[in-house]
Length: 323
Image (cartoon, rainbow, N blue to C red; front, side):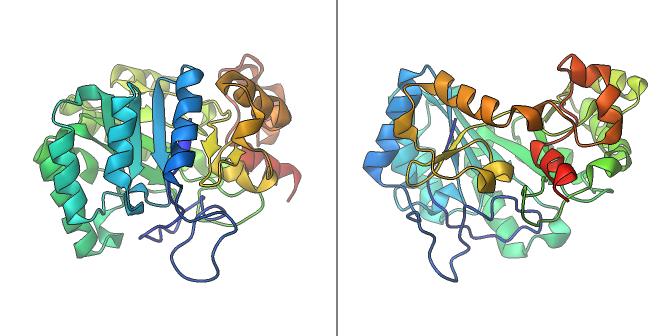
């Protein structure tokens, strides 16, 4: 379960698929508040605890732009819940110092998943801000990279991990389209073009004892059986399924995930007694999208039939039947 603590963002990534729910600080304000109130955040946290959610994700926009960001992180930890902050690492300098002071004993209960773009498209000031975060809180930082081009340049990631002593793991995501909107992404039919670059990264990481993990939306058929074996041996957790992540908005509205956010408006956290009922609601609502596959060859695919692969992100499936 993830809580959107602010819809403000201080970056404009070309592949952003959260645009339907966030604001870049210009234009008309969104109907929902741009930052979550302390009371609503506590309500979401209480819901997570009541449902036995082991890890609470904090999302944005950029979550560090919430005026009480450090206090929110500390409150989750004090409630005995692990917290995973999905951030771009471009924080206010004072917040880096304050959080560093307050989480000295947090250990693995705090994870900072830092979305990292290639240096060629990252302004120097943003790189400096990330390096400041890495120097102070590197032991909590896991690098994240969203693939939005068929030939991604990702080999800088292990070097960054080794330079700053970051967590020896890389989270790989595929930039997904909005179900009924536009953002930069690789068409699902072209995923096999991405595969060699993932293999190159896996080999480079394996040399330094760094593992890889896949977020949702990958497909098994983008790799050969031999490549799947190579990834497993290199410590890569190959994942090719899709399902509700469950995101909570600043107004305590809920949606299955950002790519499907525009298809489901109006559901609210207060309408559900616990996390299981909330997940079941979205799983049933989007069942056909999760179990159809985005390509023609998915129709007869035994891996999809057995639940080993979802045939791509549900947003790709939606777009394939609603061109």
